[in-house]
View 1 (spheres, rainbow, N blue to C red):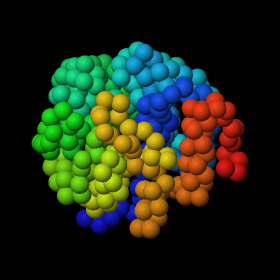
View 2 (cartoon, rainbow, N blue to C red; view 1 turned 90 degrees about the vertical axis):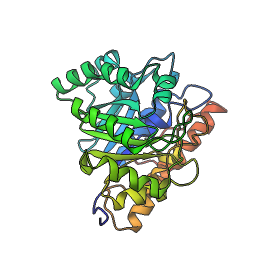
View 3 (cartoon, one colour; view 1 turned 45 degrees about the vertical axis):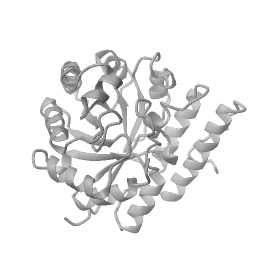
Length: 303
């Protein structure tokens, strides 16, 4: 297939990037400034936070304050991860635009991550998806470990397809395929998309590739050739998976954008502004974990 003319970047830095940040809790105003700056740079879809138990993810304890504090850009979708009905109800109170649920293609990983089987995780999501849809809130699905599991190794494309199909049938409008430990290669990525698209249209798929072995950009190019036009990225390459040892982090939004610009693919994102945001948030995290001094950022600031 030919490359898509346009790609949507789903910015996951404020949630997936910051949730596992070690050290001190990142100040709420830094998270809000980050999201505002990302929207000003042209990102149209931002996963802003996660409504999870603070016991398990302390960095996301201020989810409601973050969602209520951001400046809503009319062309930006502000999403949140909601693992259960409690999280969904909190998200609805903040006028969230979209929510996401997550499971995995690996039974072992699902047990380690959310303490249940794949089937049990899907059962938990059913009432959540039903309520979200009843409130006209789109639901995005994440499927982790699509090209390898830290506990069981290789994962078959057929198993990934089964899980994705169930989530689509439950009401998810899109499935993000996560190479959680970054062991995928371009050929693996192509074969995965070929298998999944036998059951699900490529327009309902997104790629979420970690860069553990430096393969993320190559893998993204491979799935672009297969027609995937939604890519998850994280500014400054922030983040990783707290339940997958060795997962070095998400692919950097600015690196993906540079590649897409070189391919003549439209995104609507301004690379120069995004690089400024990347430098800024990296400085803030260093300061927050060191001197605890944070600089203010507005969309017009010089970084």
